Length: 101
Image (tube, rainbow, N blue to C red):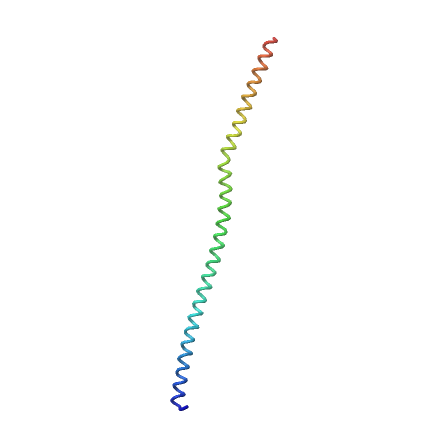
């Protein structure tokens, strides 16, 4: 090989090395972006999991709030029926006692 051929050979090698170095740097930048995206997705998944838990708790509280008027109505209905039955029984007992007096 002549000196000129060796210079051309080394020049091509240096160009290829420079090209490979740029490609490696681009790959490293892409890998960094992928890692950042992965971390963002992980944080997003954790936040969504927290939101799901909170939503379930709110659903349970909402069910309790919706059931409260129904329970209150049942209580007042039982109380009204008890009072009505007591009034009827008291009237009957009063009438029976009134007959004997």
